[in-house]
Amino acid sequence: MDYPIFDAPRLGGGLLIAAVAVVHVVIAHFAVGAGIYNAVSHTIALRRRDAVLLAFIKRNSKFLVLFAFVAGAVSGVGIWFAIGVVSPRATAILIRNFLWGWATEWVLFLVEIVSGYVYYYGWDRMPARRHLIVGWIYAVAAWLSLVVINAILTYMLSASTWTTNQFWGAFFDPTYWPSLILRTVSGLALAGLFALIVVNLQRSRPVSGSAEPDREEIEREAHDAVWYAGAFDRAQRARIVRYSATYLVPIVLMLPAAAWWFYGLPAESRTLVFGGAIAITLFFVFGVVASVFIALYAYFGLIRGKLTVNLHTAFLLASLAFVATGSMEFVREGIRKPYVINGVIYSNQITPREGRLMDREGFFAADQNGHYKYARFLAWGRDVEDLTPAERGRLIYRGQCLPCHVDGGLNDLGPLIRDWRPQTMDFAFARLHELKRFMPPFFGTQRDRADLIAFCTERYAAESSP
Image (cartoon, rainbow, N blue to C red; front, side, top):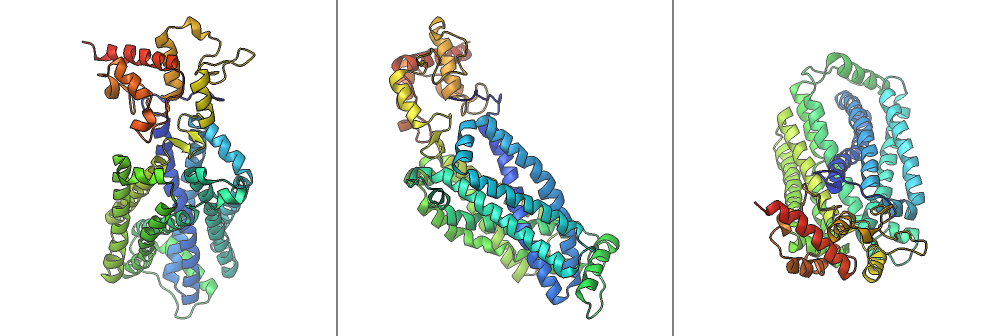
């Protein structure tokens, strides 16, 4: 344990990461999808001399800057802070193994930010062709950023299959390609859904245009349409709704991609989805059903049925997509259990090798200089022999249990073991990983286990007493 234990009262570190990560994933996926949406739509608008679509793209680019660049920057810093304090060792391993991958991603991110701002401020200031090129630079840079980040995320899930110790072997792991498809489709769908919101935020007013305007004139009309005239009439809005709905249809590709993804998962992870952990199973089913519903509604309702979407319905669909994305992220995080990085480091920041040493030497083992090997930040400046068994057990609880079981908060041990006798605790603690597949083993000697039992008995027996 090379870092202090972070304690987030009531919530726990896992929920802190989840709260920030889900928001950031939605924003990041939108940033990728919106870049592709804007670049493709901009190209179509210029080729078809469509001033209405171009006017909408200009408005949509403002939403991209405000939502992805501002909110995304805040959530991006937040996720780095959260994983840094909750899982510092796992974060360090990822940085070390993917150093040049991170460096590449940060360069791509810089290109993405610069080109995004140039694209937004380039309306009415740049020649049409050059402006379009900038839009494509943003789209490509944003997607390539996803290409790199996706490799790191999928490595966390299947690191146990990495046997070559080579960068590219870790980069293109068994779940890389299906995950890239899933995230790209998710980004396109979010771009289409948020476009429905943006178009419904416009005031109703027609956009005029000449019969055969050139590209520069089209962009001038787009400027007038959005910033002066206000927006679109009902027919124009309906056309943009149907066009945006086409970006939702690829969601159906998620089904074969998800099957491919499952095929590449470690066998232990697959069992958690198919009944091994009921919460993970339920979240997975909800995510799939919600995604398929959005795709079917887009195709049969918006495209084939030519239905329109008001602002309330657009927000409802976006909220459903947000929850579906969050559900699938919960599944991705959950099926790694009991690890943060599969086969490399457990959720309590203990490596399998350290665990084996703790079983032999004890949780409070010291090196030749008298410094604690595994509890240096837990028992700093203390002689554990002067502590009571319950006090030593509390330190063991903080080192091995607190990352997932918050005292008096999320996953509190109290409701789980309050009625257990010491013999029951001893039996369960000795084989946690067998009784609960998603829990790390207890690491330590028989004495360490007895100390933890003493702490749990004192702490939770006192709670249950009248």
